Every structure is written in structure tokens, then in C-alpha cells.
Image 1 (cartoon, one colour):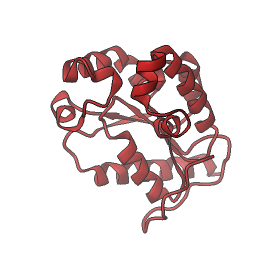
Image 2 (cartoon, rainbow, N blue to C red; image 1 turned 90 degrees about the horizontal axis):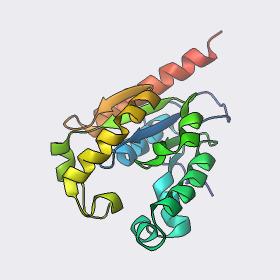
Image 3 (cartoon, rainbow, N blue to C red; image 1 turned 90 degrees about the vertical axis):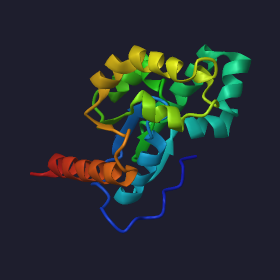
Image 4 (cartoon, one colour; image 1 turned 30 degrees about the horizontal axis):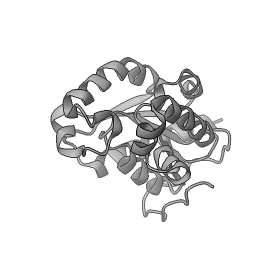
Length: 190
């Protein structure tokens, strides 16, 4: 069942109706602010918000338990199913940090509007807790390794990127909502 849309905000308008793809897909490393920003953008656009990690937790239990009990490969198979479903919805969709590793997901994102959230190691050190399964043993050093391994994929898939290290989340969300609105208007212009 799709996540319920956030309460409509007082700014922005929904993009034209086109049920074949999401308005926006948000990608990036753990701790970059994908969920917080995605929720705000969805509210500004007055559209639903979908967080694939949240859906995994709702349907399969805590991600850390999936990793520890069944392993990363099992988690990635579950994640791929949830991502594929989410990418068919007319919403703002936030993907888990590693979802982009799947070649099928990479192919699915090729024709989508994709916003990459980046963040510095210093800023992420303040944000990340030890609940992230891939970071439990190595902290920020492990995070830096993940980002380095995924950087080329993130950048190749992104339509645009925003650094969330120091700028206000509301400002970034407003910029993204304005970009999506303008881009949707271009798509429907005669």
C-alpha cells in the first residue's frame, strides 16, 4: 500500500499528472538527508512521499535484523522489489543509499528525474547513529568507503545534485521543488 501523502503545504503546486513515473527520485549516501528533504519536497509539490527503506521495514522488519539474520544479498533482493514498485508511483521517492548498486535499478533510473544528496564526512559524523547496518563496525571511515565505492554510480544517475552538509534543509527542498516544477512545465509545454 502506498504511503499516504503528506499534508499539502502552502507553497508550490503539483506537477502535471503522468502516472508513468515518479516526479522525483532522491538518491545519496546514508545520512545525506534523503528522507527529510524528500518529505519536504513532496509536501511542497503536494504529492505523496515514498521511502523504500521505510516500506522494507514495514513489510519485512528492521533492516539491521535482515542484514544480521539473512545477509546483505537477501536484503538487496527485497530492496530491489520495493524499489521497482516505488518507481511506478507518481510520488517523490527516496531510495536507500545502496539501492543504486542494482543494475536493474540503475536502468530504471535512466529516464527519471534524479536528485543526488551529497554530504561531507564531517557533517555525516554528526548525523549517523550506529543503527546503519553497513556502518556498525567502521563508523565514518566505513561511510567514507561506501561513498567512494558508490560515487561514480550516484553521479552518473543524478540529473542534479545538492550538498546538504551546511545549508538549511528547507532551502534545499525549496530549490528542488522549484526545479521539479519547472522541469515538469517544460515536459508539458507545446
